[in-house]
Every structure is written in structure tokens, then in C-alpha cells.
Length: 483
Ligand SMILES: NC(=O)c1ccc[n+]([C@@H]2O[C@H](COP(=O)([O-])OP(=O)(O)OC[C@H]3O[C@@H](n4cnc5c(N)ncnc54)[C@H](O)[C@@H]3O)[C@@H](O)[C@H]2O)c1
Image (cartoon, rainbow, N blue to C red; front, side):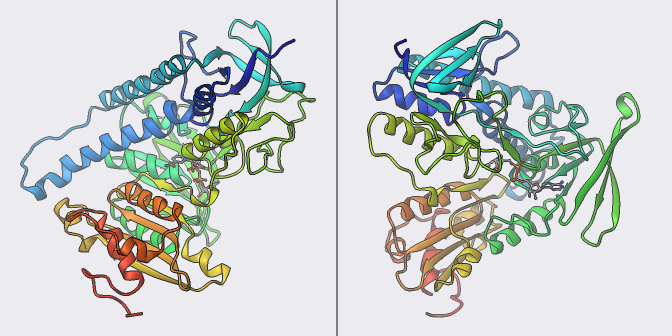
């Protein structure tokens, strides 16, 4: 049978839909399969990110931040107000509207670019055939010259706290609370735990975050992690490190139901806490259930991710895998870039991506963001390096905005001066780190950025001052040591 498509993408999340659009732009006859559907059976596009991840969580983070500002910070500006209240169902409805706009938008982009949407579940068979099972149970075999797997990830369950979707929820359930839980427990002080813990803490929950590791944000630069911990704790989040959850039990009936959680602390002592809601945010796992036929030829690695090379090729020529289902950070922008790379490779181009420069962001307030190497990594590699830091407390723009917590840190090679890492906790950290990504993509030295003119007064000047501080030339802070 002749190929029906040049490219069939399985999964319409930020990796899959971007891949499909780019492939269609390149003139390839492209289909994208999606099995997620709404209550009317209509395909939901955009994957975890648009439906129950990045976008809805940011909507709630922004709403809850405005609430805190109105409640606590307006006074500083001399703005008088009374009785600020939060209407949680309205806040959730606004979030849902944003999600709908964006997910519908993906459908529009498919139409505009000529991507065929196939609604149903895709399964990879041998010889680049894909089995499509539609909602009504009918099955169709699709032939394609290339197959791209982009099925994403699922939250990890832990036996001591099984999600029941009511009192014990995962990240999806935590976006749907219809009232503010008085006592909220969060298992895991990772990205999701901190972001969702922040949302509900700002709205009035008493939040306790239980983290098994002794170190806070182990993947981040530890100077930035310590600074972040200080700021977040000051906001009222009770973060307990070295706290391993050992069990949970739901007690009571109806409105009086509560969840009793036990955990062992780093001294080996058993503790217990009672919550109205418990969010389990202990990581995500690749989603490969019912995806691969036994003779598909596609292999998994030892951690259950689809095994791919640097160009996202699986063990079967013409079959690729991208996004959360393969190695690397589970980040939408990493998946999207892999989608573009794979589409271009299929179209015959020599595409590649730079895995060393994938930025990370935690959207707390202030945000925590970084790119490149941490000081710990640079030190472990044994290279000589120099560091420049600048606190937002010395930034005129941050003071004017009443947003002065945090700092910028830049690490550069001592010999070549090339920037090795940019780390920020502070206002608009995500946007500031993006400047570091651009500079590092062009192999900039700290001097290159130091010689660049930054507008005054901007938050970006904190990055400028940090690169100046790398060589002891910062103007608006006393330099630690002239180098
Ligand atoms: N802003 C963003 O970019 C963003 C937002 C949300 C999610 N994500 C991605 O989604 C993925 C999942 O996020 P996440 O926050 O669930 O995972 P994570 O890996 O970031 O954090 C999970 C945390 O849970 C802890 N943990 C694990 N088991 C535990 C236990 N039994 N008791 C206590 N603590 C325990 C881990 O030590 C870890 O610190 C991540 O890869 C993340 O990058 C990214």
C-alpha cells in the first residue's frame, strides 16, 4: 500500500503539534493523532502544557499574585482599599477560558497549515505503520514514510499517597479546587510543588511542602537555591527538607473529610500532619502505555523513556520520538525545539539542537530561572571560573516596582571569559535569563555583555551589573574584589 502520509505525529502536545506544523510548512503531507477529548468527544489539542500544565498554572499564578498585591502590597503605594476577596470559581473559569482559546487555536493552526487531525489513539506497529483506534472503537491502519512519537508524560504515583482525585490530587486536580483549602499539603518541592503551593498559599492556604531530599532545588545553582528558599519561606510556605512521606489516610465524612499524612524526617523521627487537600508532585514519567506493538522495533531505555540518539531517531529508521517521552528535561520548549529539528531532518535538512542551552524556569514570585552550568558543575569540572552577582535591592527599577528580592549571578570562564551560566531569582527572572540564553548561543564573553548598552532604568540592568561584577567593574554595588 502506498504511504498515506509523509509524516504521522502521535500526540498533539507542544512537541507533537509544533513538529506537525513545521513538517507541513516544509511541504510534507502530515497528520497528527490525538486521543485526548472533551466531554463531547472532540479532540483536545495542546497536550499537558496547554490543558493542565504550563498555561493554566500560569493563569492561576498570575491571578493569585494580583490578589496578594491587592491584599498586601497596594498599601505600600498608598493605594487604599477594603475587603479584597477572591472568587475562586471565577478565577478557575478565567483559567479555563484561556485554555480553551489556546487549545482551539492549535486546531486553527492545523487547518491553516494543512495538517490532518486524526482523532483517536495511535499505536506504532512494525514497518512504520500506525494503528488508529477511534473513539467509536473502529480501527484503521495508517501508512507513513515517517512516524514521530510525542506522547508526553504522566504524573508519578507513590504508594504512600494514592491520588483519589478528591482529597489527594495530582497537578491536574490542584488546578480545579473550587475553594481555598485551609490546610494544604504538597509532596515534592520541585517545580510543580512550588508553583502550585504558591498559588494556594497566596490565596490563604496554610501550605506545608514535604521534600524527601535534604537539598532544596538540587538541580539549581545552590547560591540561587538558598536565596530562593529564604524568599519563599518568608512568603509563608513551610518547606520541610529531608521529609519522606510514608503514608496517608483519609478520615472523616462529607465536608469533614481530611487527609492524615505521616512522614519520616532526616533524624528518622516519624511525624504526622493533617490537611484538607494534598497535592502529590513527585515528578512525571514517560507515557508509553499501549503505544508500541511488540514487533515495532522501537526500544525503551532503562528508565522507560523511548531510546533515541541526539537527533531524536529511535532504533527504527524513519521513526522518531520527541518531548517528555525521551531523555532530557521535561520542558515544553525542549519538546517544541525537538519537534522542529525532527521535521527539518525528515525534510532533508541538517538540523540539530543545542541541548546545553535549554533554560529552566520556576514561576514562583519572584521567578527562579537559569541557563548553562551551575557553580557546582563548573567547580566539579575543575575549570577556573569567575563569578559576578548583583542584588535586585540595588536596582532602581526593582525598587520602583516594590519587587526587590533576589539576585542575578553570572559565571564565566576565567581564561576565555566565555559565559558559562546565568542564574536569576528575582522579578522577571524568566525574561532576564533569556538574554543569557541569547548571549550564550552566540558564545558571548562576559565582556561582550559588559560592553552592551542597557536601557535605564530596567531590570535588565541587574544582568549588566552582574557581568560587570564578573571582572570587578560593577558600578552600583561595591565590588567584592578587584580582579
Ligand atoms: N515551569 C516549568 O518549567 C514546569 C512546571 C511544571 C512542571 N514542569 C516539569 O514537569 C516535571 C514534573 O514536575 P514535578 O515538580 O512533579 O517534578 P520534579 O522532579 O521537579 O520535583 C519532584 C520533587 O519531589 C521529590 N520527591 C519525590 N518523591 C518524594 C516523596 N516520596 N516524598 C517527598 N518528596 C519526594 C523529589 O525529590 C523532587 O524534588 C518536571 O520535569 C518539571 O520540569 C516544568
